[in-house]
Amino acid sequence: MRPMKTALTLAVWLAAPMAWAGLDLGQIPKDVVLEGDLGGRLDSTPWRGKEMAGKVTVIFYVDPDEKELNNEASDALQKENFPRDKYQTFAIINMDATWLPNFAISAALKEKQEKYPTATYVRDYQKVLVKAWGIADDNSDVLAFDKEGRLVFKKYGKLNKSDIQELIETIRGHIGQ
Image (tube, rainbow, N blue to C red; front, side, top):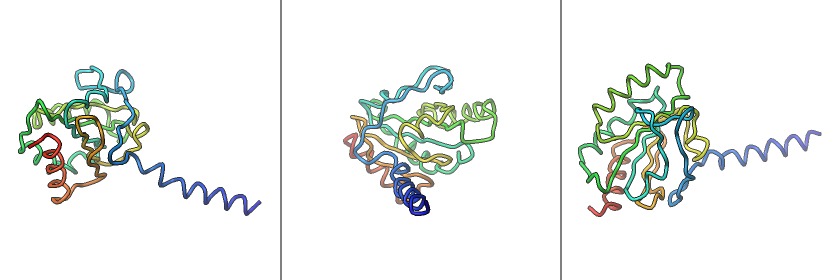
């Protein structure tokens, strides 16, 4: 019985990194819809992954407990003032990653919306993107997609200055600046 248990443990251990790997660069993620009990925009309208098509898109997928982690990256992108007809940002909040009550998070999001008015704020109540796209949970994740919806940049956790510059250069390259 012991060899079987060891083999099973080894199989699970070897498969685990593949499950955590998430999206690969060049991959187009599975389409998702955040609406109703799953989430949606601050005004309660649905958000669809298909909205990324046609523009270079940056998604900040954020655990509310890590909401300040990548403000430097947000500020840098805002300063770039990329053309709105070619570029968009979504801040998707992983509402299920915190003990904070939803009403408190929603109030804080309204303040963030004022600070970053060009970003669209979206709530994910049930970790839909974590499950569908395999991205990191309980973190601040930054993903960039080209006009066709292919992943062209990803970083889970805090972006350093070099990461931020790489993100900006990647966006510039894909919008033709």
